[in-house]
Image (cartoon, rainbow, N blue to C red; front, side):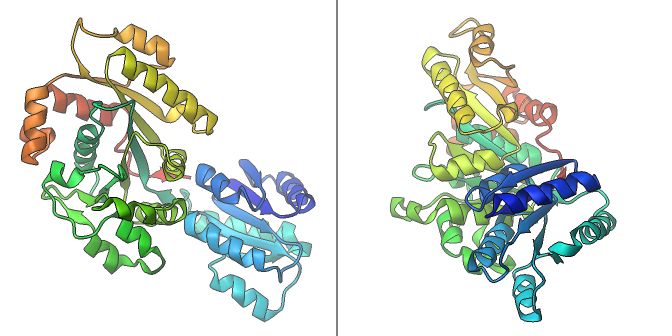
Length: 372
């Protein structure tokens, strides 16, 4: 069971860490302050978040609990001084699992962990998040994303595709789907987003695949902030088994957050020097941002035997194995895009479609959920 300890006071964090180690109830423990709490939780998604308080009346504590609740799949346990009923009620209303008196921590946390193990014997579950990015233009990010989503959908009833190529995304055309609302509408309404509103806002494809469309107007992009998108992604992860995201090729703050939270990152590139150089730069940048590069799966798209950079050179430059090679099939792929009928449906026996299906199965993109 994984823990994350969060406190404004280093001494409190240290004391909680020592107590947890002594009790041997945690497999892994992360420590964060209030500023780094959200990023730490997004990256690790612990089973239990311990919020250590020095003063239970601190308004920072309630705000922190509220923000953690928006992005955490684990249980929130607050540890602090003994509180009056009114203060305890305020924390419970924010959705914490339990408030533990610091003087009774050892016994209370052991009991809480035992209860959780009975309630969730296999751990809690969240959707598998796959992001698709490109190393420059012409890499076929959207085409790959749409067909990957359709392939995953075959084994996942609850599958959703989200278009975060904010300025130029057009997955609605790829799928011939009409969507009344977009990701910007959902982000703008995130505070009051419920099941009914979400259902009405999502585009429906005939295959059963569901779609959150890109903003219709450029002026709407401003509503897709890192905070609102983080909350929206959390909502989708709790309601679907798989979430696939077309990120395009722009690295905004919200894109970085999505990459950090993704379980798989599909990096598409063309077999030419320019695209390969951009792919290497992209990997270096993600590494600087502490995105786990083990999640990255390079896909060489539009490959022609004997033309362009060799696959061996691509492997050497990237420093990792190529997850899949998709041959060039411009005529049929363009016809599929223009007709709004993706290759996986229009030409299921084409090599393009076979390679997409292989990528899904070999990389476990259709794994139902992650137990944590």
